[in-house]
Amino acid sequence: MRVLASDVIFKIISFFLIGMAVLAIFGKMRFPGQKKLQSARCPDCGRFKIGKGPCPCRKGVR
Image 1 (cartoon, rainbow, N blue to C red):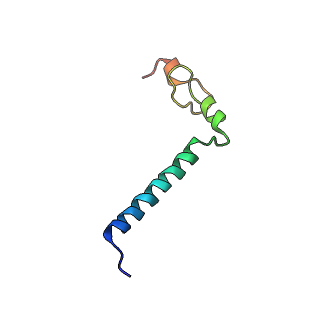
Image 2 (cartoon, rainbow, N blue to C red):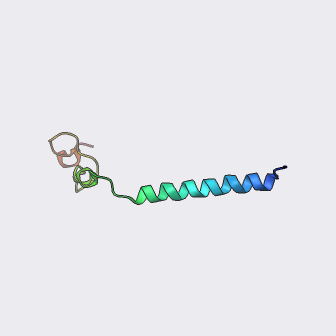
Image 3 (cartoon, rainbow, N blue to C red):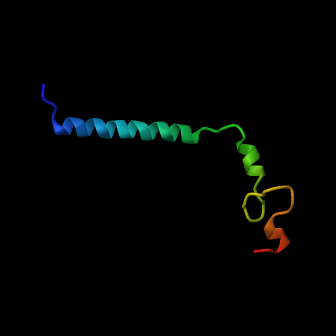
């Protein structure tokens, strides 16, 4: 049984689109700890705060 090139290309494209759909579904899911990550950001500049001190934007350091 011969396999045409168009059949192979169709299978590759369909597997690619199915894979992209699965990634989109997982990308829309909310993972645990998402709220904690958002609270670790500075409310003024949006950068992540490291440690317990103030953000560098509040210190005046750039």
